[in-house]
Length: 320
Image (cartoon, rainbow, N blue to C red; front, side):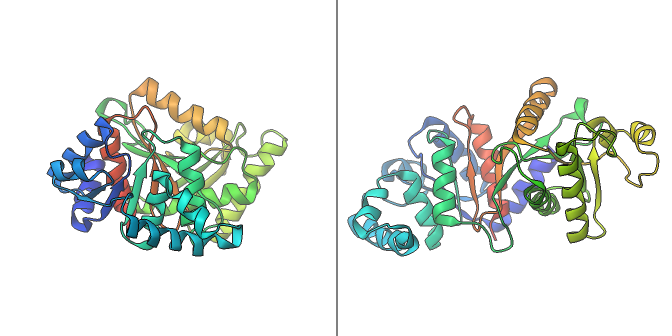
């Protein structure tokens, strides 16, 4: 698909070091072979034997000297939360903790994990050790939805957010999610970002707290991103079809279709992306985390090797 091809070319030019800590999983091994052969990134594994057999670099979490250095780093990062040198050493028995410390220290440029590790563990360790970026107030997620020739009536590449993290964001949080998605769209999409703040109501046709939440969030984004093409609150059909929008909001200057869809809550976002994925066969690349100070992305435990490759491609593009 053209977008993935373009992102792969960009990744090749950066050639960042991406750590896959779940190194012995067969899907990780298959993905590593593909990534290395395409020279998308420099893969780093934890298992030395596997790394050697695949001719990639490794970091050995069982190396006593390295573990002591990492424990000191973790202690310095978390001592204000009661972490001691001894407890830091114990925490490093978790591969995801070790991976986050490696990223925080700059030993790698990005981490992709979750094929075995539960999402909650990945996300909590990323938040505790990597932390939120200076220009962000919260971490959210997006899915890059890539459509084939038979299903691109409204665009070949769309962004859906937030579909994996924030259960019921308030107006300020929803605005923060939208602004993070706008930045991601500038990096991932070839077209200019056009944001739709989704709701069950268009142009305040219904009075409800959830409608008001989206309206306020839209105004916040407009004030912070002047000149950006954005509409809210808006129903999905009106955000996609200019004829529908004309009927429902005749005075709107927005020109559908949108390419960045900001869902009002996690129920809508998670169900929405899965409906589109299952019914249209779209590739759903993600969840891609946005708002962290360094790139970390979480895999589904049901992921395929191809999905791991796609996530590494996106992660590589997030590396500075």
